[in-house]
Image (tube, rainbow, N blue to C red; front, side):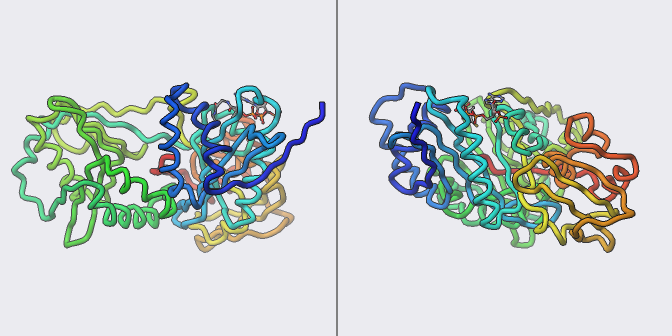
Length: 399
Ligand SMILES: CC(C)(COP(=O)(O)OP(=O)(O)OC[C@H]1O[C@@H](n2cnc3c(N)ncnc32)[C@H](O)[C@@H]1OP(=O)(O)O)[C@@H](O)C(=O)NCCC(=O)NCCS
């Protein structure tokens, strides 16, 4: 069979014909009414910075992959991050290697463009593990009743809360998320063009708590009905006071909604927020549409300068098109130095997912051999453990 397969980058209106139909078929209820096609045109401005590659055969698009140029905090440093999304293949062209080819090209292009890390929400984690990604913790969803916070209703707290539609409150909310990205490990943010969609859709309320005039907490949410639910997206707080200001606002809905649900970081302990507060804090993963995020390192050199612990180890990364090689990782002085090979230093052999797990702080070195992520002798494990202490990334962005 003669196959005329071509990979190319598409932009603008070509997304309507070459990418959106594949994505719509892969991710939405279908067949959709034909007039729905118009809604896709409305998405175009929000995708203008995304890099989309398609595999074409005789002019027909058979597979598409995209990367959103995002930024992500990794142990205190904000890095350009490739947010992989919208991976879809024509139903008659699956399992023919299209995504392997496209994704390898896409990640290489993004790495060459300065993206040191990449993250995504997988449909099946094992699929992306083959591409060097490792699982990160999933946000928890906390559920509680406003009546349990009744004691807060009349509390006199030194701060103020603003309540408005996201259409008007967007700028302050966006600025706050960008500030969090500077501080919180794992926090990932969209480029302006993509983030704008939140404002344009104007489908959320936004709640902002200010302390001494500065935004210290914020959350977007929706109310599903009278006597129903207040669905909070991410409960973004920086201090106990700012969190309590948001909880006080929720408490004022005691005669309006039965329960509040909110997403929180995996290391949050809502049962300690108030006395007599009944909470359910849960995290469920399910294939294909409720998975935890994954991330990987795309380039090692840009990680120099990362805040790390003491440790000195040689890591040989194998079996990866982007970061295969030998690196001396040295954490003396609290900042990572990345060098070439060295002798007389403990050595580990890692796959890309193994190094990524350590950099993101999600696995102990002893777990890596058990997961097939590398060979880590005890002396190298001890160095890696202090160099990359456990940490809990909070990805935030959904893509
Ligand atoms: C899932 C999907 C994106 C894979 O694309 P594809 O072009 O068929 O994948 P490839 O043929 O390039 O396979 C790449 C590798 O993953 C393996 N693989 C393919 N599908 C897999 C799956 N569902 N689970 C685990 N591994 C899988 C292949 O064996 C291949 O391994 P190899 O390269 O080491 O030999 C595609 O089949 C699809 O669109 N499915 C329906 C929509 C969907 O689920 N999209 C979710 C994307 S987030």
